[in-house]
Structures are given as structure tokens and as C-alpha cells.
Image (cartoon, rainbow, N blue to C red; front, side):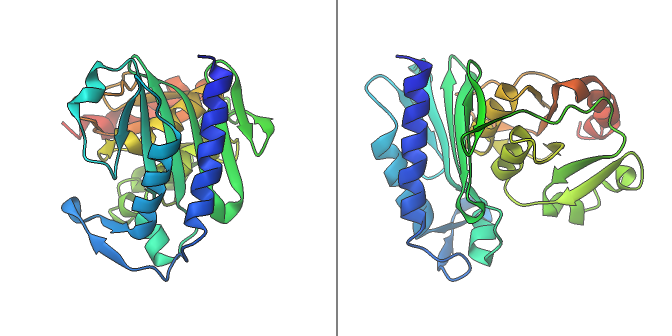
Length: 263
């Protein structure tokens, strides 16, 4: 099976999912609260059903926020890791910072992905072998030489807690933004400098974005300082950092103190 075929499947799945979500109006949709105090809507489940029908083939595994997990995936070489609607809180609130995220994992590595942001007419698709296309045009991460003056996209809750105050008046500017997958898509599209979070994220939140940032020439690592490995029994990261490859070393130094405080 070729990577070109994988990308065609991702593109087709995103197109179908965008058609599904167009039936719902952000800010005017009912929701219920599931475990973890997270909202879920009919849009989440409808998109999930669409992706499940479109993506996996025989022998491939599946991990989604909106599907009951099965250990069967642990024995699969290829696994689709998806978040049908990342940023449901924003979707419910009518804030245009939500997206549909698809990641393809092979032997634990995120190798291809696609993220669609319908409210911005933005689609980012790519793989480690082919690079990244944003709305059909080749894109890469921004080529920064150092951290001075970069803008980092961070979650609103982390910004509200003052988690990034120590740097906001210094070398970097922190911009509160919803949906971690949306933020990673902007980095891969060259529309944002970097993003990071020091709060736990599930694999489905970041699989697609990880593949895209890496494919666009970026670097992605966990708060333990390691490459993110996917399709684990407990699919949760303690945090994740995504930056241009040229900024990996200075950002590791910049964040060392904050990461140490997590332990």
C-alpha cells in the first residue's frame, strides 16, 4: 500500500467529514457532558461514524475519542488515530478554532495526517515521505533561527492559569488559541511559529498534528524529552511540544524549568 494511497484516503475522509459537519451550526448545537467533564455533540459522533466508514481497511486498527477503545488495535502495525471534532468546547461556543483531525500511525510512529478547519477553509495534509500541502500548496514550518520574537499558540486554560506568564513579557509572545490539533496544523502550514502544552493530551488530540509538523520540517517531543510513540495501551501524553526543527535546542532549554516543575 503506497503513501499516495494513504493520503488520498485521508483527503477523501476529510472531505466527507466536512460535508457532515456542515449540517450543524457552531454555537447553536446542543451538547451533553461525558466523562472527564468534556462536552460531546451529535456532530462529534456523526463525524466519527463517517471516518470509521471511510478510513480503516482489513488489518488496520482504530483509535478515536468517540469510539470505545479496544485492545485489538495494540496488535496492529497500522492504526488510524482520529479526533472527529477537536475543540468541541469551541464548537459549542461558536468559536472558530475547531477541526477534524486524522493521524496514521505505523509501528508507533505518526507517519501521515490530515487536519481540516472548515470555518477557515483550511485543509492541511501530509506525510513524512511527501511533505505537507496546505490547501494544495507546499508548506513548511517557519525557519526561525532563535526564539526571540516568536509567537507560541497555547491553550486558553493554560494562559488563564498564568502558566506562561514568565515568558510572555520576555523572548516570546503567547497567544491563547483553541484545539491542540488546530494549533499544530497552523504550525505545519507555516501560519504560526510554535505550540506547546504541559497538560495531558490524548493520542487522538495530537496524532495528526504530530505527523504534519514533522512532515513540514518541525520537531515534536513529549515533556519527557522523547519522540511521541502512539498506539500505546494508555494513550495519554503528559504534554507535547511542536516547533520548527531549527528551534528544538533553544526551546528545550527554554522549557526545562517549567517541565521540571511538573515532577
